[in-house]
Every structure is written in C-alpha cells, then in structure tokens.
Image 1 (cartoon, rainbow, N blue to C red):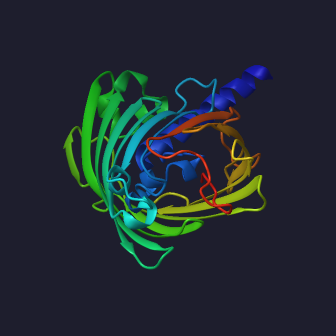
Image 2: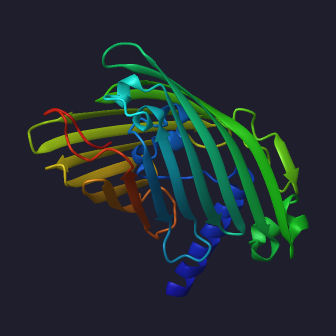
Length: 320
C-alpha cells in the first residue's frame, strides 16, 4: 500500500511540474506583506530603508520541489537626507531585488531594479507611483526533465542538454499610503515577456495584475493587530487570493495565521529587536487542494538601516 501511495505521489508531482513548465512558475511568498515592493514598485521605501530576505522550502522532503531565495535592498532618499519625517517629506526611493528559484529541471534568477516617487496629498497620505526593470535568467537541465516534460513538443527537444533563456520586461505600480493602511495596484511583466534571447523553451510570460491592501492599528499599549490581503490574476492561471493576520505583542513578539484560498494555511511566529525583524512560517496544504502532502517552511528577515523598531507615537505600529 505504501508503495502505491509513493508512486501516486510521484505521478502527481510530475503532472504538477509539467503544468508549471508550460504555464510558468508562480512565485509564492506566504509573508507577502514583508515584501510589498517586490509585487509593486510603488511601495518601494514604504517602511524606509531596509535590507530584506527570505528562504522558502516548499513541499519539503520531495526531490525537485520548489526552493526560493530572495534578497533586496530599499533606500529612501528622505532618510538619506536626514528628513525629520521621511515617510511624508521624502519624495523618492529605489530598490534592488534578487530572487533565485529552483523547481524540477528549472533554475530561475530574477533581478529587478525599482523606483518610486511620492506625491504628498495631505498631512497623512501619499500617492506613490513606481516602475521596475526586470531581468530573468532561466536555465533548463535537460537531464532532469520528467517523463511528461520529455513528451512535450517544446521541452522534448532539449533532452540531455543544458539550455538558457533570458527575458527582459518591466513592472508598474500605484499606491495610496497612510501610516496605518494602504491600497495598491501593480502590473508585472507589462510587455508579456516578449523581449527574449537564447533558447525559447518557455512560452512568453503573460502580464499579471496584483492588488494589495493592508491595515494596522494599536489595540492597547502592548498589543497591535495587522491585516494584509493580496489578489493576483493572470491569464491561463487560477486567481490567487491570500490573507495574513498578525498580533504584535509588546513590540517584540508577533504571532500570526495566513490563508491562501483553495491552497494552503500557515502559522507564523517572529521577534523584533532594535533594528531586526526575524520570522518563521509553517505552511500546510488544504486537504482539497490536491497539492503534495509535504509542508512548507519559510524564514524571513528585515533589517532597518536607519530607523529603530520603536514607537514615536502611542498609536504607531512598527511593522507590517
């Protein structure tokens, strides 16, 4: 019986990767609210100048399962200039995002340069506009193709060899931000990934629309609540809707839960120090999602370059 279950799991995994290879791999980040600027360049510098990173091991224990590594740096020119309130007075911010993703026979390295400009609408609100230049390097190991992929008319011609593909595109975004809430809309791959070079073993990337929103509030002196949501829609893929809810205790410890509709649920825990935010997330698939039974582990870290994780006002919340 165990042998049959093993073969069934392997078959499901092969089919899943065959579908992903043709429709492109969607990058899941369960702590998406910590990496807002990756999804929308307009949110670059929303939390000031930071260095951010995460490691995600999906379907742990399954050979060839997705593994993702991410590192970014955001610089707020208002903070660099020493503005007393850079969140409102600063006008420009830039970012560098580097993501490396492996799944099955594919290795992807993605570099995005982002820029955001802010327009002050009132004493508490900003309108942010952003743009990002995106470069992807995709490597295919033809020796690691599954049986389904080998029978694919496009991928099958690369059996037994290494192939490389380069894609250049750009992202756009707009956001309305406040200290306690934000609404944003971004577009990834505006040109549909049509600028390519090298071997063309993948279809062009269709553009994806990304909606994000969040709200945070101090409930008492020692407790704050934080809610974030994201909706992604893209041609030839199912819509993605997910939420995160966190409770921040004494500005030092947070506990949270998250849910990706029809896909997975997660539990979160993290700590804050003077400048550093470290978190761990454990994600497990829903029984009806038809995903592999392996669980997902995600480790995140955010380091503030210039500001401390300390309140300047009684109602301020120091993280998203």
